[in-house]
Image 1: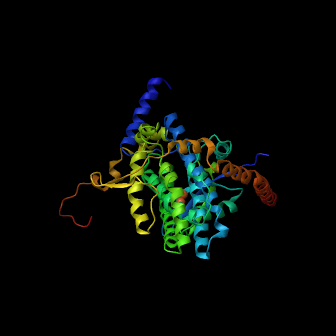
Image 2 (image 1 turned 90 degrees about the horizontal axis):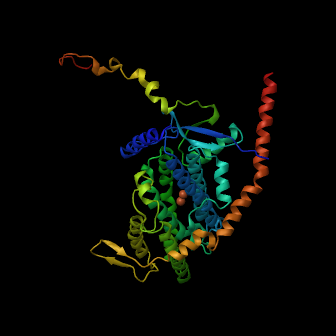
Image 3 (image 1 turned 135 degrees about the vertical axis):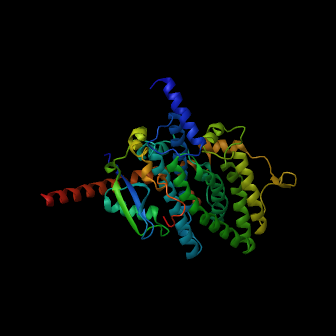
Amino acid sequence: MSEKEVKNLEEIFEQKIARDEKIEPKDWMPEKYRQTHIRQISQHAHSEIVGMLPEGNWITRAPSLRRKVALLAKVQDEAGHGLYLYSACETLGVSREELYDQLHSGKAKYSSIFNYPTITWADIGAIGWLVDGAAIINQVPLCSTSYGPYARAMIRVCKEESFHQRQGFEIMMTLANGTPEQKEMAQDALNRWWWPSLMMLGPTDAESIHTEQSMKWKLKRKTNDELRQQFIDQTVPQADLIGLTIPDPDLKWNEERGSYDFGEIDWDEFWQVVKGHGPCNRERMNARVSAWEEGTWVRDAAMAYAKKQEDKKLKQAI
Amino acid sequence: MKNNWPLWEVFVRSKNGLEHRHFGSLHAADAEMALENARDVYTRRNEGVSIWVVESKHITASNPDDNGEFFEPAQDKVYRHPTFYDLPDEVKHM
Ligand SMILES: [Fe+2]
Ligand SMILES: [Fe+2]
């Protein structure tokens, strides 16, 4: 294809997106569109999968059967989210194996929030309330993104997320209304998860390199700072309602803006965690890689069994 | 040993009276496992009453690059639509 032809195709492609038409797997697309989508969708899938680890930590120690079945169902949902997203990503011509390889070799990123530890039961409440809460804010706009398989996966994901957030908030509410020790535990979890949750919505607009192109392709419909403000504005009243305090002395309602002003985010911490120096980066990767490696014999055995059954059927047919 | 599970496409009928619809894909060693995985991945909240799985390699798809000529035969057949036929206004229920 000549350069001119490609340019022409690109123009038609951009117009299609501007008209809100979806791009489907076999449609022509610019290589950069494909690569950007592989990167974002796989990062998203990896985050769902690694995100199971901090919560999985508490399944066996949930304080009641009700909490246990709910947490189990939530973690299972996250596995499902990972699978919807991997399957959407594979439609772009990348194999599942390559995607796992990128995760396990550290080449691919996942949401840095999952590199923080879950040291008390209240952390499970804080994750559902804040981390899933921030994820919902990130994900809802993606339900109308331009790449068809991604948009469809996100619609399924968003439908399931709301129970995650509600179960988390219920845990926090129960602790906050409990004994002084329980309330303290809830407050402590909020203190530790608040800032990482704000960081989860991404670097500030000034620092964010992908925003403009991503807006055009509807991979993003609001900037990181807008999403962050939305998250803060909706979460602060929820904390007030259960009598917990947001750990930010600069947090103040701004009448003029109709929004909360908030304090400085420690971006150094964010970049440290992104670069692999968070409290649990190594632990998370070890857990993932060993689950994959130690499962090899199971995958092999299943294939051997499938082949044997297939051969048997063939023999019977003859 | 490289022993990757093949890819399967999953189709789900949400309730009787509706057609099976493509829901997504997954990896499984064989058809039975694909069905069970599909149940766990795509119908955790009663989204289905029937599931079909088919190995992705068995699907033949039309190529969108050829859409112009491929779907062209239908383009000039306006007489396939009811509005093509001029009837007087007095004719009712037609
Ligand atoms: Fe999720
Ligand atoms: Fe979730």
